[in-house]
Each structure stands twice: as C-alpha cells, then as structure tokens.
Length: 457
Image 1 (cartoon, rainbow, N blue to C red):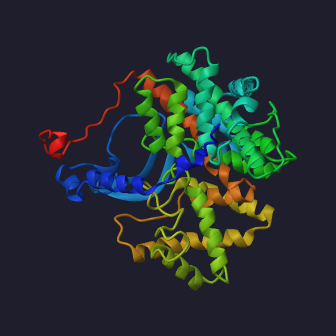
Image 2: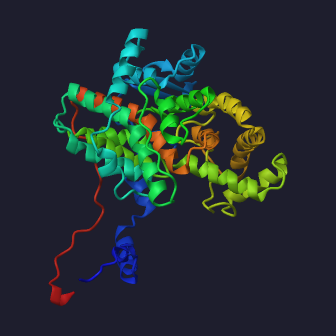
Image 3: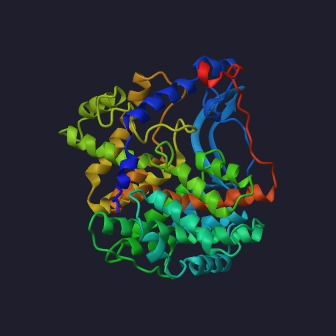
C-alpha cells in the first residue's frame, strides 16, 4: 500500500501561484468604474451610510440625526424591539437578574416577559440544552479543528442529520430549531474547544454536563472551567457581554447573511452555518482578539503604562504600519456606523472597571482608558476621515474575556453564542414576511469576444 501524506494537498505550489496571478489579472476591476456606474461598494455610500435593503422591527442602531437638513453625528444608541439597551441592562442588573434569556425572549416575541413567562422560557431553553446521544464522542471529538468557529459550523450542519423535520420551514418548526440552537451553542463551542485543547495541546479533557438551574452565562463558565467555579460578578459581566452582542440591526454582515440565505427557503442549519462563516471573518467577529493582542504588544514595547507620550508614539506607529501587525489599524477604535460613541462600549465600561478591581488589574484598565482617550485624537490628526471615531464594543470585550481567563479560541464563538438570538429573530422575521429571494444586481463590464479554436490560441 502507498502511504499518502494528505498535507501535501495543503501546499501552495509554484504552479498554483502562477495560476493565481492569472486569476488576479482576470478579476481586477478599475476603481473608477465603481464611481462611473454608481456602485455602492460594501452596500454603503461614500459617507458610510448603508444602502437600504430591508425593513425590520427587531433592532435599531442610531448614530446621527438631521439638524437643519444636515446629517449630524450624535452619541450612539441601540434599541432592541424599541427598548433602549441601556434601559434593558439597567433593568435586569438593578433587579439582580441575568439578562440573556429575558432579552432573547424580547427579540423573538416582541415583548418583555412576565416573571412566569421568563421562568417557563428559561426552562424551555434548559430542556433543549441536550445534545443527541454520542454526539460529543462521534462528532465533536473526531477531527477537532484548530478554529472553533469551523467546529461550531460543522456541528450545526451535522445536527441537520439528527432532525426529523430538518427541512420544514414552517414558523413553529423554525422556532423550535432556533430555540434548540440558541440553547446548544455554548455546549458545541466549549466542548469543541475542550476537544482541541486535549488532542492538540495535550491538556486534560473536561466535558462537564450543563446544569439546568444555571443561566446561559453561568453554564458557559461552569462547563469551561476545570473546577466549574466562578464569582457572581464574573457571571454577571459575561451575561451583560452576551446581551450587548446579541443583536445589531439587520445590516451587519452576518445578520444580512441570515436574511439572504433564509430568503432562498433553505433549512435553519444551513442558514446559521452561513451566518457563522460570516461572523468568523476578522472584519466582523474576530476584532476583539486583535485588541487583546495589540495591547499585549503595546505593554511589551512601552516602559511606562502611564506615559502619554510613549503611548501616543506607539499608537502613531500603529497607524504608520510600524508596530504590531503592520496593518495600519488601531484595533477596537472606529465603527462603520457609530462616530461619537458606541453605546455598547459606554454601557460595558463601568462593569469592566468593577471586574478589573476584583481581578487586581486596575493598571491594565487605566491603560485601556488612556488609549480610549488618546486614540481618536491621533487618528483624527493622522488620517483624513469623513466622520469622527470612538472606541467600539470590541475594545473592552476582549479585555473582559481576558480577565475571565477565556481562551482566545473562544472569543468569536462567545460572540456567536450571543448573536444567534438575533440571527434567529431575523430568520423568523424573513419567513413571516414571505419576501422574495434576495438577489441584488451586478453589472457585467467585460467585452464580448469571439471563440478561438484551440489550434489558433
């Protein structure tokens, strides 16, 4: 028998490089043509405003208002089903409740639950938080991926095979599938990480069963940590992080993907797997990892974390592609919609400070706060920009996950664990309105050519 090294097929050979050059030459489109044909690249106009592609009840992102006929930036606000997220977070934290389950109910059903409705809904989510027999052994433990988002997508697609009504797109069935996936995402993500860290990193393998009496945030920490221990503050802040990440309007990339794929009337598992693939991208869900890595590099390259001159110099070098990953970016600063402030970051900051005190990381928090103040000033000085910049939610979420000792591999899956509530709400909305398949136009700009016989090429 001949032993085949499958890794050879992962190599980029000189032949592939040459063919890629041909492909690139064939595909490049002159930038001025996009202006000539009034193409909204990225489905955004020159000022960054999104092209209106749909209507939604589910959430609203507000970052500007009309003043004397002029679009004027304002401090950002985020609304879930008409409720300001600031008020939602204030409400459940004031009453010492966890908010993920309550806010999921709101997104799906357009109403805040009563005590009884919340209790019944939480029990239903707990009931669905059960994987098929041997799923962990036969699916998650086999061929674990180094990327947890790929593991999550594969697990979601595999669950199709365990569903007797997988292709039924009636609203009751899609709701049932949605509730199951919302419930299972923490298990699929964390068990996938545990398998990878065991088989590839040689760490001990822990597969803790979920506890039905715990909230989603508590269960995440319970099944992740070897001793299942966590403080009340840790669980509360993780819960707030989930609420702040669970929805952000219909136009963000992964939610728009949900609408596009749903409009074809495919199954729920294919829709959610597509959304996961979108969220995985570093331009979407992976930004908070870059924030943490950037700060680690910063701390290694400045001697005094309180020296504004040193920090300003480092941030300037970031923009000039002279530091960290040489991408020319200050990660966690700037947003496609918000300019004056990201309300999620504003809400998060006070809770982050409390956690930094519990963890004894006040100096790190002070460094983050200093960069928060300096970075926008430096960007405005060094770059010509059409709108202001401020920190976004990724700026502090990465720091929170770092303080919670969450592995980097789980940062984006935690985002997915939160955002699937929004995805499912938008899938239900798309199906309820029975809209057309989403099919935007692309203009062909190539010239017609006559076929040439192979002997004459």
